[in-house]
Amino acid sequence: SSLLVPSTGNAQDARVVKSMEALKADTAKLGAPKIEGNEPVGGKEAPALYLGSTKMNNNFAVVDEVAKAGGQGMAATLLVKSAGDFIRVATNVQNPDGSGGRAIGTALAGPALDSIKSGKAFFGEVPILGTRYVANYEPIKDASGAVIGAYFVGYKK
Image 1 (cartoon, rainbow, N blue to C red):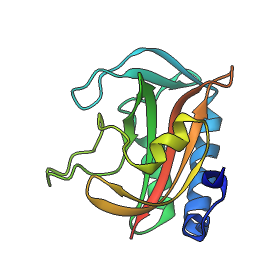
Image 2: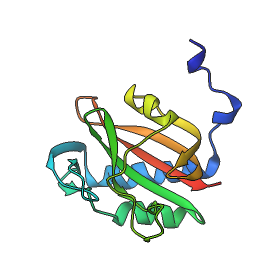
Image 3: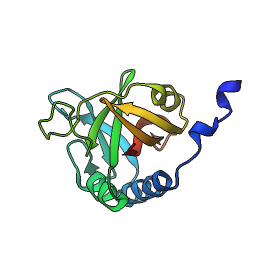
Image 4: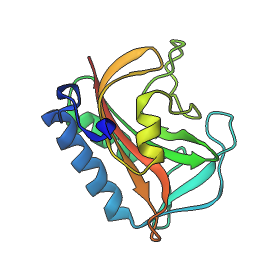
């Protein structure tokens, strides 16, 4: 179908590609992704995303490192699949309310959601909680190949 043909608007952006590589490399060092039990994020129940034996819910070390290395305006996020949603469990994206808190517990919305649900990467410009980002989302798959979450990197337009 024509939906699979990438438009020029979805061309991969070099900065984003580099940060996605860093996020995937840093998480791969921790171990294979899996879901085990629950761990609330931002006051919301969510499945607990593990990389090896490291729980990633409310664990900001990796996303902060990747965002910092990516330079001005770069953001990194790990999301976990929760029923039909993907919930941010680790992120350096700020809440839009100006509280300075992290936007954990918020759900993925917009065009990337369908791509991730079908196990495909998404490149493009997306609004995240009111701010536009040049973004890349990629599915996180467990050992069986099931999509259990998503990686996100992007920078503010």
